[in-house]
Image (cartoon, rainbow, N blue to C red; front, side, top):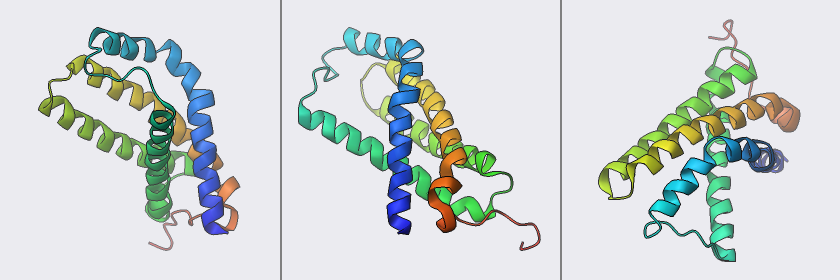
Length: 154
């Protein structure tokens, strides 16, 4: 049951990522990202097949699953509400994402601006999905949620 609730949380966060955060991105960062992709069409696949869409959603599912898993593991030692703790963890996960993006930006001849905008977009996405995780975690995980930090226990 714990795994089912955990996967339900990850699925719910993925839905929020695309149905809530997606429209916000569409007016903030996506025009810039798509513009960079169009300028450098030789580097980017812009026409996705069904397999491309499935793998893209799978990779994103795995990324959010990793973030939620790290949150679940770290929650007992993080001070503050679930919202505060989630934003701490998702900030850390964003930093990892940004660092990996910077490695690719530095090692490949792809246009640098694409990576910079992508990392800025990810800050928005990680922040909003992290907030959603903090608000939904206990509701979805129920009795399987990790305990909150307790100064008495420390």
